[in-house]
Amino acid sequence: MLKLLDQMALSAGAPLQVGLMAVALAGIAFVTFASLRRFNRPQRPVTESAGAAACRPWTPWRNHHCTRPAPAAGDGHGRARGEEAGQLLGGVSAFQRNTAPLVRDELARLAREGQRPTQLFLTCADSRLVTSMITSSGPGDLFTVRNVGNLVPPPGADAACDSVGAAIEYAVEVLRVGSITVCGHSGCGAMQALLGSSSAPPGAQTPLARWLRHGRPGLARMERIGQLGRGEVALADRPVADDVERLALINVMQQLEHLMAHACVARRVAEGRLVLHGMFFHVAEAQAYVLEPGSGRFLAVRPDDGTPVAVCAAGPAAAPEPGKGGVTEALEAI
Image (cartoon, rainbow, N blue to C red; front, side, top):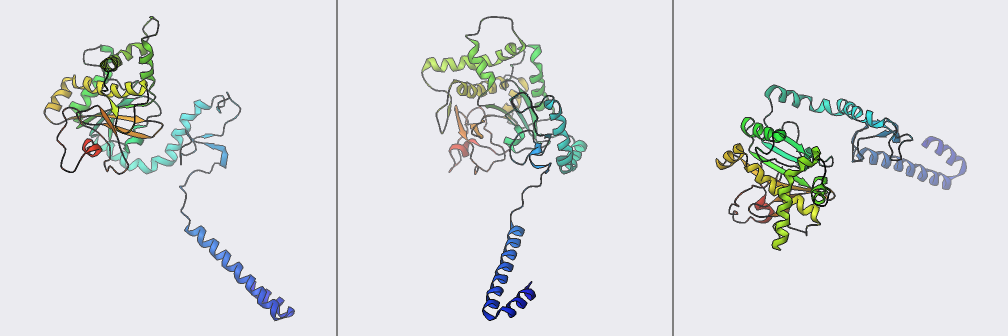
């Protein structure tokens, strides 16, 4: 290129030669700068191309892998007929393709050595509450129980409710976990159903209605608080939004009491080998709150709190260490 420009400049005279050489050098500098910029640019996570918009993940949050094709004409909600049937299989296929190679060695180790979780995490079945995401945990970390309303039936309440009791007994007596966390959340449908149950007409007891009776002690507790005119439960940094949020917070405290009614739990707590924790997750804020020991206050967990999982001991509050207070006092490392 430079040789060609030089020949053109010689035939046109010295002034043109200087101008053409300047243009050439500027072009070379631009190409070099662009190449270096692209080389030094932060690399985006590797994901499947799948033809640009022709790929849809389970949900649109960042860096999810493709699990299904783009929507065709469907039911008005972006869902083609039969799309849901292939969604789960598509997600499993994406796991085999993208994630399984990364976790296979760790899962093989867990298969050989068995599970040794240190935590029992009891929370709601709500699909927006992703336990491994909000606790930054992985395979083998949490022994998890999920049900509608994160409820803990007291022992002997009903033989039909033995599933949760069995999980508690297994976690405490066999796995020997060191802590149990009860985690509620905002916008809980179970809390909404409990609040609306007093005005519902009497009728046949459905499985859901029978199950929700284990949340009624929390509802009665909230009504007593209102009659006394003082707040037993609170969020430390803002007012409680509404009765649904208030009941969700009270329900966490109530279910911790139900846990203590289980003999194996009470015994291990008395021995000092088990602690109970209360937690609340606000979905819209993506914010976790933990129950302060010895109070009804839930404290917001901050990015710089420095604990892998924010938990709070149930029972009498211990005296704070010098220089500690607020959320630092409430949080404990696992």
